[in-house]
Image (cartoon, rainbow, N blue to C red; front, side, top):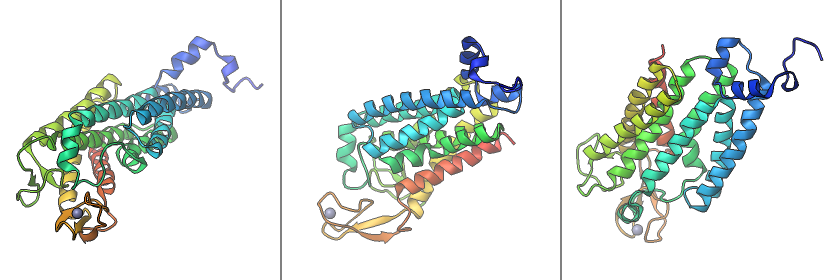
Length: 298
Ligand SMILES: [Zn+2]
């Protein structure tokens, strides 16, 4: 084997383990190359861990089968980029699951006829919430630039902030008000905000910022997580109030976001973009959070 090539067999196991624990940022300080065998080893370990966690979550009904498959893909990509990326994804998943489970039966009753989905997360929800983090992780593999940390932190913080705001906001007994018109709206309706949910959004963004701090990400990315996360949740509410799809149940004479209403009747598109459902709005607000997060690294 030519001497200039670095391969697994040439390096002591301790050195390999040490380099596996390093993020691409640290690797990039050593030189432009990311060793392919380290990437493959992390991806392999990430695949096994992500599969184990996703199967447990599927059995606990936190993820649907296609949601578990999507989570395995995201986990593998993030682990390949570095344990710091996988850690942020895991924190989002655990915090989101915990806050969703918190007093879940009473929330389900309150929003059953309004919200599009409840209970376990499907692939569209998983990708809308974690897809941009995994894309930024993949970008950092191709080109080790600090911008990816800002994009990833802001994007996943926006998803965490929106999840916290939704899950805490729907527990509040007072009626939410539209973020645009200020008029009272039904609990669980997109675009409605409460002060408790708004505080929870800041809390969700702060959880991701703390994770980024533990992962030793650049300070700008930690600030970007708070700013991008909170702004992302606000973007989510504005889009939810204005352009998100709404449907009408003619049997009940009520507006809803569900394609099939709680009464069993099919619903008709009434306002907003017919193609822009809650997952689409989540993906857009995650993108908004990622862009704002990136601005802090310029
Ligand atoms: Zn109905």
